[in-house]
Length: 285
Image (cartoon, rainbow, N blue to C red):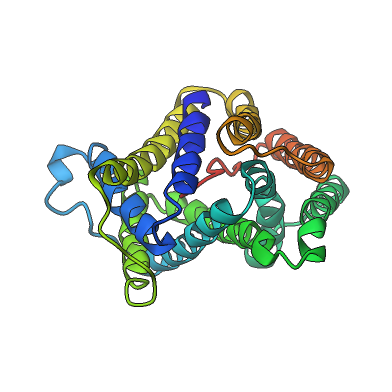
Protein backbone atom coordinates (compact mmCIF):
# COMPACT_ATOMS: atom_id res chain seq x y z
CA UNK A 1 0.00 0.00 0.00
CA UNK A 2 2.85 2.40 0.81
CA UNK A 3 4.44 1.70 -2.57
CA UNK A 4 1.08 2.16 -4.28
CA UNK A 5 0.59 5.57 -2.67
CA UNK A 6 4.16 6.53 -3.59
CA UNK A 7 3.74 5.55 -7.25
CA UNK A 8 0.48 7.50 -7.49
CA UNK A 9 2.27 10.52 -6.00
CA UNK A 10 5.14 10.17 -8.48
CA UNK A 11 2.65 10.01 -11.33
CA UNK A 12 0.99 13.20 -10.07
CA UNK A 13 4.39 14.93 -10.03
CA UNK A 14 5.11 13.89 -13.62
CA UNK A 15 1.69 15.14 -14.75
CA UNK A 16 2.55 18.57 -13.35
CA UNK A 17 6.07 18.49 -14.83
CA UNK A 18 4.80 17.67 -18.33
CA UNK A 19 2.39 20.61 -18.31
CA UNK A 20 3.57 21.79 -21.76
CA UNK A 21 1.76 18.80 -23.27
CA UNK A 22 -1.98 18.73 -23.77
CA UNK A 23 -3.97 16.99 -21.03
CA UNK A 24 -5.54 14.71 -23.64
CA UNK A 25 -2.10 13.70 -24.91
CA UNK A 26 -0.90 12.88 -21.40
CA UNK A 27 -4.09 10.93 -20.76
CA UNK A 28 -3.56 8.95 -23.96
CA UNK A 29 0.01 8.07 -22.92
CA UNK A 30 -1.15 7.13 -19.42
CA UNK A 31 -3.68 4.70 -20.87
CA UNK A 32 -1.57 3.19 -23.66
CA UNK A 33 1.63 2.65 -21.70
CA UNK A 34 -0.41 1.62 -18.66
CA UNK A 35 -1.65 -1.39 -20.64
CA UNK A 36 1.76 -3.06 -20.51
CA UNK A 37 1.73 -4.04 -16.80
CA UNK A 38 -1.90 -5.16 -17.13
CA UNK A 39 -1.00 -7.83 -19.69
CA UNK A 40 1.21 -9.56 -17.12
CA UNK A 41 -1.95 -10.31 -15.10
CA UNK A 42 -3.70 -12.17 -17.90
CA UNK A 43 -3.47 -15.98 -17.53
CA UNK A 44 -1.58 -17.54 -20.46
CA UNK A 45 -4.48 -19.83 -21.30
CA UNK A 46 -6.75 -16.80 -21.80
CA UNK A 47 -4.45 -14.65 -23.93
CA UNK A 48 -6.38 -15.41 -27.13
CA UNK A 49 -9.81 -14.43 -25.83
CA UNK A 50 -9.24 -12.57 -22.57
CA UNK A 51 -11.20 -9.57 -23.88
CA UNK A 52 -14.51 -11.43 -24.12
CA UNK A 53 -17.19 -10.43 -21.64
CA UNK A 54 -20.87 -10.99 -20.99
CA UNK A 55 -21.26 -7.50 -19.52
CA UNK A 56 -20.19 -4.96 -22.18
CA UNK A 57 -22.67 -2.40 -20.85
CA UNK A 58 -21.19 -2.34 -17.36
CA UNK A 59 -17.67 -2.13 -18.79
CA UNK A 60 -18.64 0.72 -21.09
CA UNK A 61 -20.18 2.87 -18.36
CA UNK A 62 -17.39 2.05 -15.89
CA UNK A 63 -14.74 2.95 -18.48
CA UNK A 64 -16.50 6.05 -19.80
CA UNK A 65 -17.10 7.51 -16.35
CA UNK A 66 -13.56 6.55 -15.32
CA UNK A 67 -12.11 8.31 -18.38
CA UNK A 68 -13.97 11.52 -17.54
CA UNK A 69 -12.74 11.28 -13.94
CA UNK A 70 -9.16 10.78 -15.14
CA UNK A 71 -9.34 13.82 -17.40
CA UNK A 72 -10.76 15.90 -14.56
CA UNK A 73 -8.06 14.94 -12.06
CA UNK A 74 -5.34 15.62 -14.63
CA UNK A 75 -6.71 19.13 -15.23
CA UNK A 76 -6.86 19.66 -11.47
CA UNK A 77 -3.26 18.55 -11.02
CA UNK A 78 -2.14 20.98 -13.70
CA UNK A 79 -3.84 23.99 -12.11
CA UNK A 80 -3.96 23.40 -8.35
CA UNK A 81 -1.55 22.50 -5.59
CA UNK A 82 -0.81 18.82 -5.08
CA UNK A 83 -2.10 18.98 -1.50
CA UNK A 84 -5.39 20.57 -2.61
CA UNK A 85 -6.07 17.97 -5.29
CA UNK A 86 -5.12 15.09 -2.99
CA UNK A 87 -7.31 16.41 -0.17
CA UNK A 88 -10.35 16.85 -2.39
CA UNK A 89 -9.81 13.39 -3.91
CA UNK A 90 -10.19 11.89 -0.42
CA UNK A 91 -13.86 12.88 -0.51
CA UNK A 92 -14.57 9.93 -2.81
CA UNK A 93 -16.04 7.67 -0.06
CA UNK A 94 -18.57 10.41 0.74
CA UNK A 95 -19.99 10.22 -2.76
CA UNK A 96 -19.86 6.43 -2.70
CA UNK A 97 -22.22 6.47 0.29
CA UNK A 98 -24.62 8.81 -1.53
CA UNK A 99 -24.48 6.81 -4.76
CA UNK A 100 -25.07 3.60 -2.79
CA UNK A 101 -28.32 5.11 -1.52
CA UNK A 102 -29.42 6.26 -4.97
CA UNK A 103 -28.42 3.24 -7.05
CA UNK A 104 -28.12 0.30 -4.66
CA UNK A 105 -30.98 1.16 -2.31
CA UNK A 106 -28.74 0.95 0.77
CA UNK A 107 -29.99 2.36 4.07
CA UNK A 108 -27.62 4.78 5.78
CA UNK A 109 -27.73 5.42 9.52
CA UNK A 110 -26.89 8.54 11.51
CA UNK A 111 -23.15 7.90 11.93
CA UNK A 112 -22.47 7.79 8.20
CA UNK A 113 -24.72 10.79 7.56
CA UNK A 114 -22.58 12.72 10.06
CA UNK A 115 -19.48 11.55 8.19
CA UNK A 116 -20.95 12.74 4.88
CA UNK A 117 -21.74 16.12 6.42
CA UNK A 118 -18.21 16.53 7.79
CA UNK A 119 -16.77 15.63 4.40
CA UNK A 120 -18.89 18.21 2.60
CA UNK A 121 -17.78 20.89 5.05
CA UNK A 122 -14.17 19.92 4.40
CA UNK A 123 -14.66 20.19 0.62
CA UNK A 124 -16.25 23.63 1.02
CA UNK A 125 -13.43 24.85 3.27
CA UNK A 126 -10.78 23.82 0.73
CA UNK A 127 -12.56 25.13 -2.35
CA UNK A 128 -14.19 28.32 -1.01
CA UNK A 129 -11.09 30.50 -1.40
CA UNK A 130 -10.81 29.28 -4.98
CA UNK A 131 -14.43 30.08 -5.79
CA UNK A 132 -14.06 33.49 -4.17
CA UNK A 133 -11.22 34.22 -6.60
CA UNK A 134 -13.12 32.67 -9.54
CA UNK A 135 -10.68 29.77 -9.67
CA UNK A 136 -13.10 27.18 -10.99
CA UNK A 137 -10.36 24.58 -11.33
CA UNK A 138 -11.40 23.47 -7.83
CA UNK A 139 -14.42 21.85 -9.44
CA UNK A 140 -12.27 19.32 -11.33
CA UNK A 141 -11.16 17.23 -8.32
CA UNK A 142 -14.82 17.20 -7.23
CA UNK A 143 -15.79 15.90 -10.68
CA UNK A 144 -13.14 13.23 -10.18
CA UNK A 145 -14.63 12.18 -6.85
CA UNK A 146 -18.11 11.98 -8.40
CA UNK A 147 -16.69 9.81 -11.16
CA UNK A 148 -14.85 7.75 -8.58
CA UNK A 149 -18.10 7.10 -6.74
CA UNK A 150 -19.85 5.93 -9.89
CA UNK A 151 -16.86 3.81 -10.90
CA UNK A 152 -16.74 2.20 -7.45
CA UNK A 153 -20.38 1.13 -7.70
CA UNK A 154 -19.84 -0.31 -11.19
CA UNK A 155 -16.63 -2.10 -10.19
CA UNK A 156 -18.51 -3.61 -7.27
CA UNK A 157 -21.17 -4.88 -9.67
CA UNK A 158 -18.57 -6.25 -12.11
CA UNK A 159 -16.63 -8.09 -9.41
CA UNK A 160 -19.84 -9.56 -8.00
CA UNK A 161 -20.59 -11.14 -11.38
CA UNK A 162 -17.06 -12.56 -11.56
CA UNK A 163 -15.25 -10.22 -13.95
CA UNK A 164 -11.45 -10.37 -13.38
CA UNK A 165 -9.46 -7.30 -12.37
CA UNK A 166 -7.31 -7.36 -15.52
CA UNK A 167 -10.38 -7.22 -17.77
CA UNK A 168 -11.84 -4.26 -15.90
CA UNK A 169 -8.49 -2.46 -16.09
CA UNK A 170 -8.04 -3.37 -19.76
CA UNK A 171 -11.33 -1.84 -20.93
CA UNK A 172 -10.74 1.20 -18.74
CA UNK A 173 -7.34 1.80 -20.38
CA UNK A 174 -8.70 1.32 -23.90
CA UNK A 175 -11.58 3.72 -23.30
CA UNK A 176 -9.28 6.29 -21.68
CA UNK A 177 -6.89 6.10 -24.65
CA UNK A 178 -9.76 6.70 -27.08
CA UNK A 179 -11.05 9.56 -24.92
CA UNK A 180 -7.61 11.15 -24.94
CA UNK A 181 -7.25 10.61 -28.69
CA UNK A 182 -10.49 12.49 -29.34
CA UNK A 183 -8.82 15.64 -27.99
CA UNK A 184 -6.22 15.56 -30.78
CA UNK A 185 -8.12 17.92 -33.17
CA UNK A 186 -9.02 20.29 -30.34
CA UNK A 187 -5.90 20.16 -28.20
CA UNK A 188 -2.31 21.21 -28.61
CA UNK A 189 -0.65 17.86 -29.18
CA UNK A 190 3.01 17.86 -30.18
CA UNK A 191 5.81 15.37 -30.71
CA UNK A 192 7.64 14.93 -27.41
CA UNK A 193 11.39 15.03 -27.01
CA UNK A 194 13.13 11.77 -26.09
CA UNK A 195 13.36 12.89 -22.46
CA UNK A 196 9.71 13.94 -22.29
CA UNK A 197 8.62 10.71 -23.97
CA UNK A 198 10.36 8.85 -21.16
CA UNK A 199 8.35 10.89 -18.65
CA UNK A 200 5.09 10.18 -20.48
CA UNK A 201 5.88 6.46 -20.51
CA UNK A 202 6.61 6.59 -16.78
CA UNK A 203 3.22 8.24 -16.17
CA UNK A 204 1.56 5.19 -17.71
CA UNK A 205 3.77 2.72 -15.85
CA UNK A 206 3.48 4.46 -12.49
CA UNK A 207 -0.31 4.74 -12.69
CA UNK A 208 -0.82 1.13 -13.75
CA UNK A 209 1.71 -0.30 -11.29
CA UNK A 210 0.16 1.75 -8.48
CA UNK A 211 -3.23 0.20 -9.20
CA UNK A 212 -1.74 -3.30 -9.30
CA UNK A 213 0.10 -2.74 -6.01
CA UNK A 214 -3.13 -1.46 -4.51
CA UNK A 215 -4.92 -4.65 -5.50
CA UNK A 216 -2.08 -6.79 -4.14
CA UNK A 217 -2.17 -4.91 -0.83
CA UNK A 218 -5.84 -5.74 -0.31
CA UNK A 219 -5.28 -9.35 -1.34
CA UNK A 220 -2.40 -9.96 1.06
CA UNK A 221 -3.42 -8.03 4.17
CA UNK A 222 -6.46 -7.01 6.19
CA UNK A 223 -8.28 -4.06 4.67
CA UNK A 224 -8.36 -2.46 8.12
CA UNK A 225 -4.55 -2.40 8.13
CA UNK A 226 -3.90 -1.23 4.59
CA UNK A 227 -6.64 1.32 3.89
CA UNK A 228 -5.50 3.96 6.44
CA UNK A 229 -2.10 4.02 4.74
CA UNK A 230 -3.63 5.69 1.68
CA UNK A 231 -3.64 8.94 3.67
CA UNK A 232 0.14 8.97 3.30
CA UNK A 233 -0.55 10.45 -0.13
CA UNK A 234 -1.40 13.76 1.57
CA UNK A 235 1.98 13.73 3.30
CA UNK A 236 3.71 12.96 -0.01
CA UNK A 237 1.70 15.70 -1.74
CA UNK A 238 2.70 18.31 0.85
CA UNK A 239 6.38 17.30 0.83
CA UNK A 240 6.74 16.95 -2.95
CA UNK A 241 4.68 20.08 -3.56
CA UNK A 242 6.87 22.14 -1.22
CA UNK A 243 10.26 20.97 -2.48
CA UNK A 244 9.50 20.55 -6.19
CA UNK A 245 6.89 23.23 -6.90
CA UNK A 246 7.34 25.65 -3.96
CA UNK A 247 3.74 25.00 -2.86
CA UNK A 248 2.80 25.71 0.74
CA UNK A 249 -0.58 24.33 1.88
CA UNK A 250 -2.92 26.96 3.30
CA UNK A 251 -4.82 26.70 6.58
CA UNK A 252 -7.95 26.11 4.48
CA UNK A 253 -6.37 23.09 2.79
CA UNK A 254 -5.06 21.58 6.03
CA UNK A 255 -8.26 22.05 8.03
CA UNK A 256 -10.49 20.92 5.17
CA UNK A 257 -8.28 17.89 4.57
CA UNK A 258 -8.54 17.02 8.27
CA UNK A 259 -12.34 16.99 8.12
CA UNK A 260 -12.36 14.90 4.93
CA UNK A 261 -9.93 12.37 6.42
CA UNK A 262 -12.07 12.10 9.59
CA UNK A 263 -15.18 11.69 7.43
CA UNK A 264 -13.59 8.94 5.32
CA UNK A 265 -12.29 7.20 8.45
CA UNK A 266 -15.77 7.14 10.01
CA UNK A 267 -17.24 5.68 6.82
CA UNK A 268 -14.47 3.09 6.60
CA UNK A 269 -14.81 1.97 10.23
CA UNK A 270 -18.58 1.71 9.90
CA UNK A 271 -18.32 -0.36 6.71
CA UNK A 272 -15.77 -2.63 8.37
CA UNK A 273 -17.93 -3.10 11.46
CA UNK A 274 -20.90 -4.06 9.31
CA UNK A 275 -18.70 -6.48 7.33
CA UNK A 276 -19.82 -4.79 4.13
CA UNK A 277 -17.81 -4.54 0.90
CA UNK A 278 -15.40 -1.66 1.39
CA UNK A 279 -14.46 0.45 -1.60
CA UNK A 280 -10.83 -0.57 -2.10
CA UNK A 281 -9.91 1.55 -5.09
CA UNK A 282 -9.18 5.07 -3.86
CA UNK A 283 -7.61 5.89 -7.21
CA UNK A 284 -8.37 4.59 -10.65
CA UNK A 285 -6.34 6.71 -12.98
